[in-house]
Length: 178
Image (cartoon, rainbow, N blue to C red; front, side):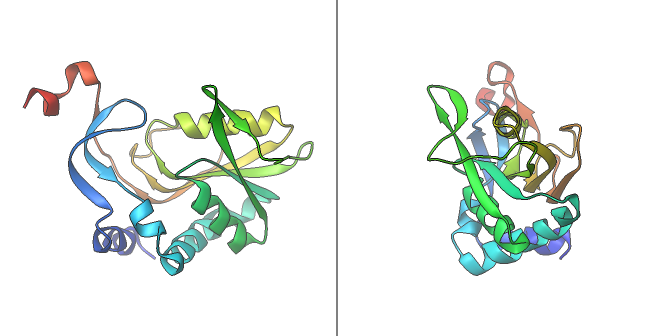
């Protein structure tokens, strides 16, 4: 599938929104990608995540991890496509953690996947969780990289769509000023 094919799917499910949005990073933006509107359709989620898995499968991972909540379905479907197990991290008292009995074996190769990468904060926190648990992150994946490819994790990264979407500091947001 091409980026245009994927963007067509996002538009078809009204998942590419325009307006004034406050992102989870605290930054403001005039466009928002709501992957949940696409991922609520299991066949579409399977199709998109299989595409992402094909870009990451050569890295030799044994487990797929993602930050909750947005990455949970992505991790599950990428793991299913690769025949691996999926787990997720979640914030507990402000810190990203592995809970619910999830574990990672020492030096176990892991992929960290997301629905959308903007600043990379949640992805980095999940990388830290995997490494603190003893795993070794071998690659990063996202359905959408809205950083324009600018976020660098120092390891292989793949996305289905790369967008260069402006973000603004809340104190200097032209959308707020309007």
